[in-house]
Length: 412
Image (cartoon, rainbow, N blue to C red; front, top):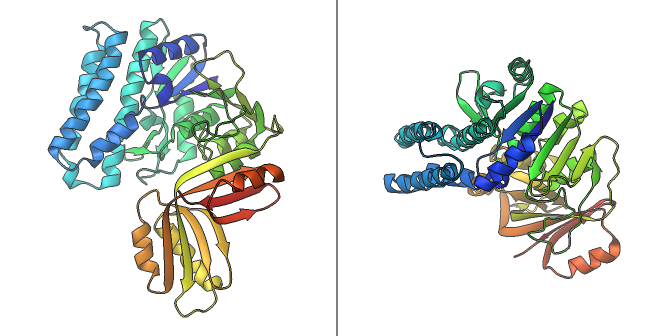
């Protein structure tokens, strides 16, 4: 069996769903994972974050209109897909009436998960109407997790059993990325951009021949074309190289996606849904980086924290231990560390908006200087000449280099 994952950009409109149908319709033994359509995850987040009923109504109307416009292009008005969508919308409205009464993270998972439930229902209905005998599977009953809402941990043994039992007969299956379910039957999610991870979970559990992630780019590039003018397609790279790139922030592959594939030696292919015949990128065991070129990775919205002791004493192991405990407590993702005798400097991602809580806790013992809205560049396999030219473009606040990797934090 092969596993295909289609992201939001690939099913953002009716034309995208038709392209998915053309690609998936060629396969007889296939497991398809889909994300929410287009930017619908953002739209559902706005719904959850709305401050009042008027804001919630406006957000939900936008969600309804977006999906109904797509299905109106794909199906006749009397098609059964319309009452199915109406049922979803009614469930969402019921949830919104409880906003003030429940934990935010719990509510987030219950509401935002509808993006995938709706998209997968539409796509599966289109496949069936096109003659593909696809079977819709609920990922909340397949992927078993704990109840760490918004970033749940997978119970691999139960998940494998569930997936294998659901796909014994083979055929074409369709399910959702990003969402999962707890032992108590409550909806959980695997973290933002977790649909790639979902696909890797399915591939691992099925012992799949391969996993293909379909994107709106030609494959894995050596830099993000949104921020870099000159990019090159990486035709081949190893699991290790891809894991390093994901660790440093390359957005084309979710960091948690690669490890289960490496453990099972399942090749990962990244291809363009706009040009499905092109070779794209293959990530597999023992592949050398091809072509061997510098790879540029940008992380935006970084925070630089400079920490020193109030009594001007040295920053020693005991201090560093308490700093890391606090970073973990406030879920601040550490991207770069540099320390001297008197100062500990760390560049972090404030994903959950907890930096002020961290500051309040630490400033009793330490002096903190916090600089926000920074960028961090990571260059793998740099060349010294290109490095010098690159540095001249920025006001550098912090930099670090080893034999393979060069990192710098810059303002602006």
